[in-house]
Image (cartoon, rainbow, N blue to C red):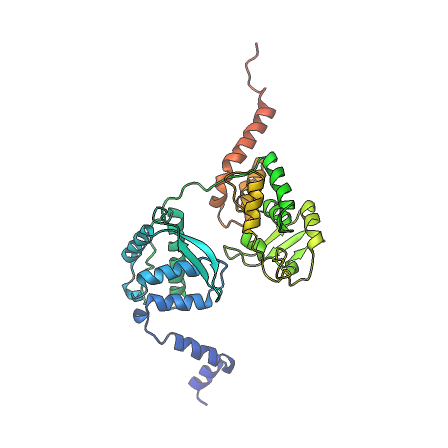
Length: 340
């Protein structure tokens, strides 16, 4: 055996030979010949994130630029694509088809995509291009086509939280709901700030009522997060504790082996409580708003909500400012006042 052959054998162990061969086969198509639609297919085949809208948004990009090769894609094309998406109607989620695919329908011509939604479309496609560069699927020296395209300005996020009277009415109606776990679900959303999807995906094996914690899997931003279960929440959950593989908030009809579909039960409870302009996601805003009003620093609120960037939590800054102003007036009002 010559030195060159020995080096090759040591550098590529036989156990890795198959995976290397598969990798080389995957790279067989020259990058400049790779179509965007093929790139998106490869990306989605290995995508392990928790963004449930990723496939739908990339399908829209496939329809727009799928027949272009990577070499043809530049920032001008992406800018034009965003403009085309802006002219299309917004979509509303209807559920899953018999193959488990998400179904959408247009909201109507009057309701076009918001700047925030268009930014999410750009983020989805930018992630594909970043992956292509990292995987050496892009042409050598290729410039990321989303670089240099500014995010569209977004309005301040919605902040809607319940006052005490509204909260009491809502929880009373949740307790009387046809879905027996609606109160526990709403309470957990309000006390932990978790998203509806995160809670509906929760199984009992992820919950430890003795220590008062619940471990989420990969969340919307791809991170894992620990939820703190306060004593009142533990008491609300205890009656439902069950088999570790069953869903905490599962469907009664499936004996809790499938996540619950509780939208109608939730709407009924809100209507009976006579609360206007309040969505399930606003329970998450309640959590953050109550923390802010108690003087909790924004970085702690961001940690509770699972925000990667503090900017996402700045919508609650005015509430912390009000709390600080009240405390300062109470403690410092007499200092420097004019004596008569």
